[in-house]
Image (cartoon, rainbow, N blue to C red; front, side, top):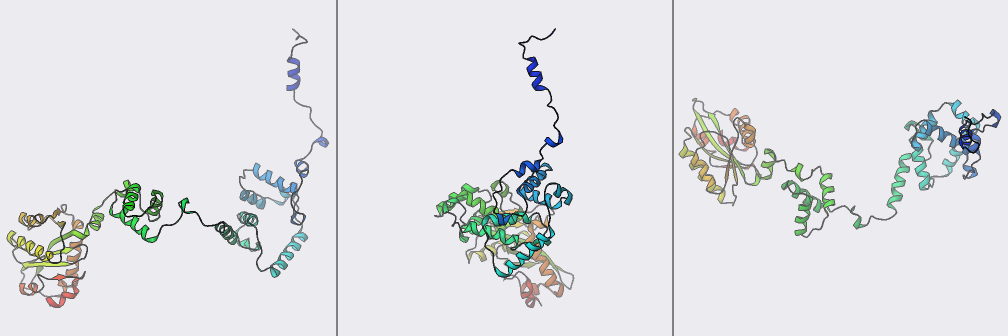
Length: 382
């Protein structure tokens, strides 16, 4: 059934019909359309036509370039035939003239004056050239970037309220000390403690300071290991242990010693062939009397599970408010300071001497060593 004359179907079908093909002489190329754009550049700064430059940029974008550096890389890697089709012409004579003029200018001008736009353009173009070909620049790209940073600094100092003013060295060290000694304190807690001391610092500045020194936030900083515990509480920690000495008559003697972890002072309590409970307890009383004179207070006593350390030995230290920490089974690293000193006294002293009897060892008992190695006392046992 034919359509009514008033029906719009005929008009719509006519509009949807494909247009008639154009003849080759009626088609305009992209270069012709780009050539119609007015060139805003100065006449002395023109090397390639604006249409050719825009055609290269369009071709680079169509191939996936998303930045000025990527466009420059595409143009430098493109074959000469492709660049010639886009209207880019390389005249060897012109290039020779430009290079000679640049050489003349380098001899006459000691340091060219570049605007920020010139520096940014040269820095971007340097990304498209390998570093071996940077000799073509009148100034190195690194100096261009340095000049850009200098121009930014020349705008004026950063206002204090911007939060970028560096803290004083003393305040930074105080923040780091509070964070290390109190691993459960967060940024706001440290800020409040500093405010009590009269130091006004923001939580953001505290976070930046701790991150700069490799300190994590409070939850991740609160993992206390045995080594960290000893370092934090070293001022009141005392470690003790026994080591044996075999005489030339094949008699075994036991030496009890105590070592202060913060100062590495070693106290030789006594030497005996039968370390019973009464003897060990008396040596503990003698040590506490010795420590009361300089006013040092024992907070923790670290010892192993040796049966020679009886209950009376622990009660002497508990009566002074100290807590006895017993190391795990077969874990010498838990009492590493005492074990390391035993190794030192054996390798540097006892392995080089012949001990005849207890009298030789009694000459060194009851004294305090202020050195970390027993070399200074070899003469007393020789």
